[in-house]
Image (cartoon, rainbow, N blue to C red):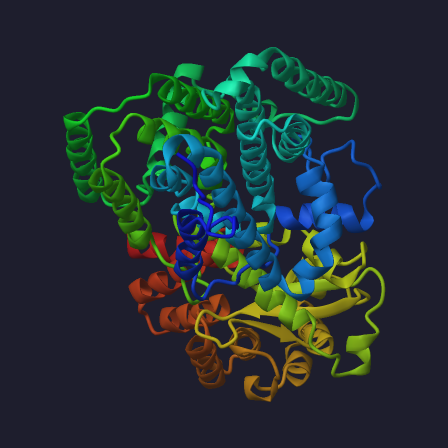
Length: 592
């Protein structure tokens, strides 16, 4: 059965099933509503930094120490890098278009043998998927998205018996990600069209030469250029069988959009799949060749993902998901009820997936190490707001002349958000300056000659949540802290005027009020110390404010209340020696 028919004048008629599966990309796009689409974050800055400042070579990791993927790293980030920084939404829409094109190619490759509807259901697997959100959201996902697109193109060209273009697509897929080697090697064994079986030897030899050349070069680079694979970074690992089961369970969960879904719903989905399978068996159509071919595709791809243990990212299962779709649909009937049920089930699970948070949470979801949409979008918001603050026009001479080697100071940032910037690479890419680095308030206080480019603070209730602080304010704060260390408390109070006179956000003003409270405490002015401490704590959960309040409570004989205040300090700064010593003293006195 073919996917197109010819009209009265011989023009091919539009394949509406192909249109439908391409348009299905709107579903994950809508599920990303409000996300900072396409914003560079984390690994993106490794690749952008390499494209800007690294060696002009395609024979390295492109900014990473593991894997060789020159098409999806060096070439893609060199070509699209400027657009990522200026118009990231365009990058996300390009990814969405590439995903839609991949689905259309898969549908048209299968339609002559399977019919339009069944082919569309298979092609919907990588599109109506939670992993599709990551493919659209994150520029680095081009490694998996590129592999999917070129595998789909190679599949399509093989179904049309076009060897030269199939070889080109196969090589491009391999240069995006190693995982593509599985479907590429399966191409000559495509169950249909029958004509391919008569010319299989030529296809096997041609594809074998391409894969062998790619693999030989890859092995040479692993030995000579310092490239590694992920397993070389891991310590003791579970046996392969355990890791395979982990990868298999994760891939199946991704295939049916069950990741993060409550166990009760997973049980309902399992029951629904059993019902669909029973319905399918009523009128059995089970093409063994396609079932075996799709199963091999899925299982072999999943086996390679066992090497990614212990951190899973759903985008990694994208290529294997196509094989899962082929295997599932090949084992079912032609019944529209069953096919529609599978699509609706996967769609419902996708719609139940967690949405994109509208704000930057103080703490990351889970352990913060994942590659899920919620974690990535949080880091992207941190990256976007920091870049926006950095891009503000200089408002003073000192701000515009910070020069080479400037340090950019964080007073407070969201927990576990350092990953967003790939150390200082994001800063260096934004500024086109390899000498720029991140720093802390400690740096500003320790070195009076330090070049300070600007300061940044994170306020969980602010709008925006990340605020830029002028360099002269950071220098003044550092100077005041140095005076306090020298016990020049009155001079420090003059250097640190009341919080309301400062131009920063709540965190900066809270820190200033806390330092003033410490100065008044040292000068034995309890009334002003209490007033500044309370002002500091109204603005932000200040460690200095809690410490001053603890000392004042201790003076009033309220040891238990003072210990509670010190616990608040130590929960944020567990190594604080003053708070630790005072707490131990109070604890000892209370226990007598």
